[in-house]
Image (cartoon, rainbow, N blue to C red; front, side):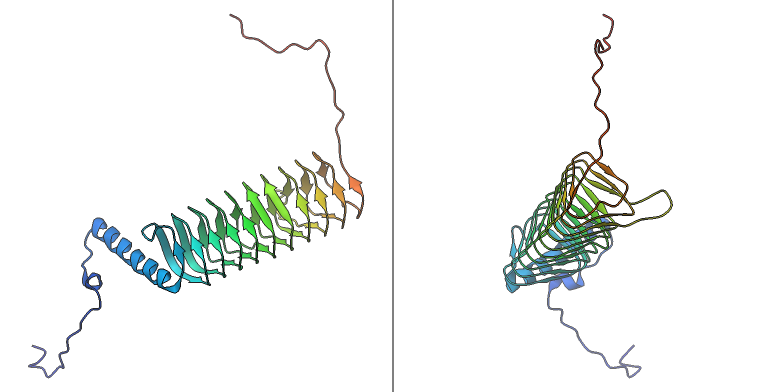
Length: 253
């Protein structure tokens, strides 16, 4: 009919058989998706990326890799992701719309979303960087630490069980285990400012808006509701009481 109507007829030769596979069921869709993921993995291998298992990686967007990048099994990349030279991504990490600086290690089971990670950082395992996070060079974010909408300057670290939200953190700051920034009053978000060379003891609550001055120390277990002056020790303590003669309740037999 086309010839009779004077329409030009041309042939097309696909480069691969999978390009013309029909998709009519969920099973066929799953097979085609895995085929496409293997194609992407093969291209990464040609570029010099080390993949622990090319069959166990999911790229749902664009992944750009520098030299000598290593990616372990089960990792998912969503949107636009950039991995610098010598970046290592641990197993089952999920990275979305993020940039990871050269030499940084992303340990297993970490989640990074809409964040910028500087050079030579160490993230995880089980860390979560939420949108608006920016880490400068040499920052350590450890296990079960969550960072949201915060900037952390070079060589600072929060290694255990902490929440850092809506904060500006200086350089060489140590944030002890169990520290949280209380940034939400039920209506508005408030900012916490932690200046350079601050040491924050474990189990500290920083009730924003609050500023912790340069070189200061916050004693463990403190609840800080007012600005802490630079270079001094600031702490809050409730009175410790022991009740004589108290007996622990016991069940009746």
